[in-house]
Length: 453
Image (cartoon, rainbow, N blue to C red; front, side, top):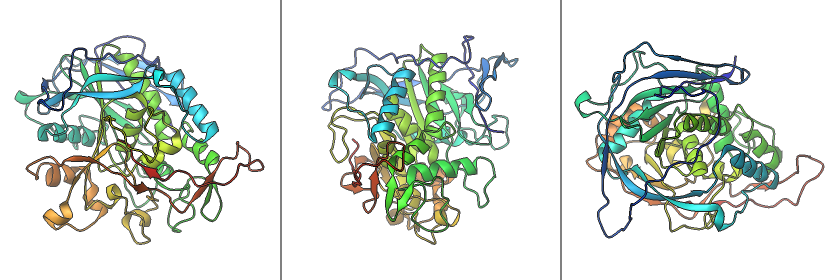
């Protein structure tokens, strides 16, 4: 039985199932200057209030909530997280219906709609300090906790001493064992929210937990054409390849947009969560692996900061989904402003590095088709191969080992840098069919060079 649930632990008792997207409040008064040290803001912990549940897909009528019988208390804690001012360019109007319309146009045209500069604004807001080691580790632990559906579960990982607390587990939402899942963290003043999305559950046999749906989304996001035209072990997730290295992009984009796929579901969940907290002034996203990719796509869509861990290259997914981007964010061009997207990973992880696609690779052996090479935003790479002598292995991508053996082991946080001259699916051709195989436009190569600043 497939349905999406939304569990929000909040201090509000408003209607649980409105999906209205409220504009984010901006922090006024910040003056950003690269020549001066950035002011740092410390944020601290909160308490549990309510549980909300919204069913979607097969069970859209399931709308329920209850007040918890537990007295307000800090259930889990983590260290103080430091925030700094940053500037992110985003759409002026980010209501769900507006985003839906833009994506529908992109689906019809095969590319993101070009909007006038007036459709965009540059927001001054507080974002996570990407150079602060405790902050980077804290958000990684939030990404880890998204794998654990129940805070009373024995696998729940404590994330810091209570006398230095900032955030605490606030809510779980999304699919339970069959898809997207995540947690919402709030600071004690309810001014900053972190949404952590669950990543890929790797398993040898499909049907274990969310593995089947994870593989479906991974192969749609990261393969050139549905897992077709490659190794026989790759799980084929749609039928859009029409000839050798030729793909029907209309078919592919339509497959990405169906409701049981994570980007669309993520937007619905994001809309519901922000509708429950219209007073929240800062929203951050985080996630590991597939969760990081979905978090990035949502961050690009709504203009909020994102920190991911060992996420596979995501520029291909962002491009083919037609995620709206500001003027200058064209494929193949750099951008002077910062998108607020930061990908943390290390060189021994072939998934993060975009090299887990050979016939005998661990990804291929279990059906994953990771062909994408290019990341959006900036990458913050730890050279574990050179520094620690590690060998490339999918096992090194596990978030637990990344936290303990990389993020905590290194003295300093890796420098985040832009990547240019990166190519995805250079030997493929994509065409638009207008929804019909009998009516096609000329077969042309799709843009393959990504430079997302």
